[in-house]
Length: 629
Image (cartoon, one colour):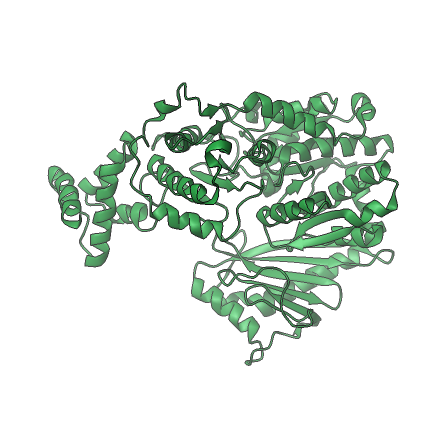
């Protein structure tokens, strides 16, 4: 195999008059030669194949290393990487290999896979240089399953990401695949996986799927022939029926149809060149609203994202420039912005001062949580029903739902960061007969309707519109209602940011020094003038609030995460990012109801932020780069 591999690569190089891609470390060269030779044998996409041949011919080892040094890692979020040639990138061949592994894993897990099948959908991303697109990747994935006699529900056109988990649950399928890179830069794509419970996969599925991919790298006989889809009895297009059923289910969350019909509140919507436009229009019709005014330059899908630097509404005002202009022109008061796969939602409101306020994820979480509880309470006068009512948020999100739950008598739980944890926990609770009303994370993700066990920007958009319209009948704005929530349940003021650090050893050292703050296995007792009352470390599993000092939430040695609670009601979490070279921090100051001076709290929060940066991050010592530099 190795001799044949070297001969094949050498032949390409010789034809171009250059040496093989070796030239450095012999072991590395041999592996690189093997990977590239395999690629030349297996890749049938003319564009990616030609680009690898060109690199070999030019003896461009550096670029070949980038393409072939490491296979994309399959994690609980599936895959995400730039589109292009080689095992480090998203392309036809890596999609085929990934799906073959996933298919074999599902065959082991489900004896009835050939009866139930899987759902596959895609966003509008495309990459001309490599010929890769979400639609093509979805067709190749479908081909893999159908070649093995497994039914596939393949959407015929782009959909929002939440439609995949919805379809898994609604049709009782074994799994779902969504081809999307959400709000990542335009060159990226991704492969997101849902389990039969309708939630994103969690460990150990990721490790075992990863293993199965490694065991099924060689394309199967029909892998490249997507014409097997044409006329196949195993291929179903769920688009029409799922569209109909999703919006029927959504109607159950419309509480004020008469208000919606009459409302004078005007809305602007942007889908930021993604998939959301027609789906949000349909959601508004389902609630008897006049559909929102769409930002014309951004309403149609465009994989180039020409009007924004980053297609991520979480970036705030920069992404909303065109929305502000349209709203000012049409006298609209509220802007609703989805990210390109429509699972997230950003909201902005025109203030009396003429300024636009963009709500943070935590602020919108407070508003939606309050609204869904208020609407539920109106329909459920029986107080005993409260004991089965739950809301969830991730551990780095605001604790405002906890404060509302304490006062109102329902249950609140926090989970690890990410909707995979909230979706799986919500499903466990629902299976126990509980009512999960709402879940959110600070990264503008909201689960307002538990028929989707993931964040859903379509339902969140129309529910926010109903909330705004209802408040308008009381002469209240979203901002005024947010203030009323803080007055009633206590101010919760948050601040999140990060430092950039590319050196894993430095990051490890920083966290180890926090665990041995006085030189001997003790966490810090203070941070500047602020007294620490409680420490939880989800890397090691330590929690000094528990009788046995063991954390209740799942722990992970592969990522760093420590939470400090302070005597003044402050909570600070420091954690590493799974996908970026960042150490993130999330701070919140929670005050009890009734005695809150927001200006004083803001000042105190700023002081706490400064103390954490100075004493815990020590940017000079660790050579950390602040956000935005």
